[in-house]
View 1: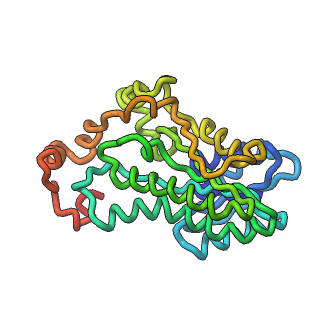
View 2: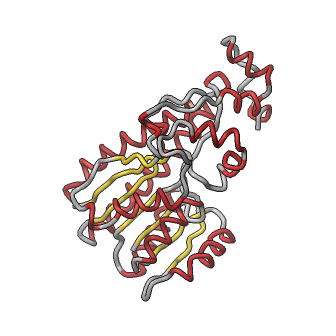
View 3: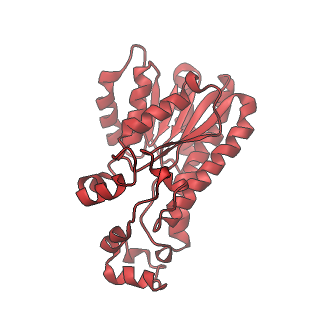
Length: 283
């Protein structure tokens, strides 16, 4: 039995498909029930015999919701074998445009959402004799991405958490790993894929010459979740077309496009372009 948070997103859906094709039952957790229902409908043709898809609408940053989703997943077959917390994300936002609240929000979104799954999956996985947890990091945890300070910090912190959790939970035969995607096509990144100049700027730094698809990431998750990786824990695997052999793309033009030339020039001059205490100014 597998639990996937962010289950209606592109990577979550691709991971679910790889699991159900292998015959595993999956519980998808997401904030919107309608999106979850649509995702289940799209996955049903891939269902192997005896596999099921359960849905749980809830917030991945809410302890009670996460615990309830874990309980539901564990109740289907009386055990929980796999957890994939895919919830995360961040913004292109220069350091001088952040305040405490905006910076902390990205840390919570990427680290706390994973922590809650790992923390409360231990008991049902212990009862099952062990399990595998695969977190979703980013190449921003390793590469220096200017203009992504909160996101880069969050993903670096997530990888530190993966290593610490892997060490502590190894005594229970619970493995904790991560995959480190490069820019991958999802609803959140669709506009970047549709813009030819942006696509080329990112692809030029990838030796394999293209950006990622959700199935690329799901293949790595499937390996780390399955018995083939039974001697692997505490690792983060880069799945990003070789980008870490080079450098992060220059996103200065994107910053200027998002916030305007005046704000961008203010940042370059070392000044906050507006009062970052006022969240409404740049939402």
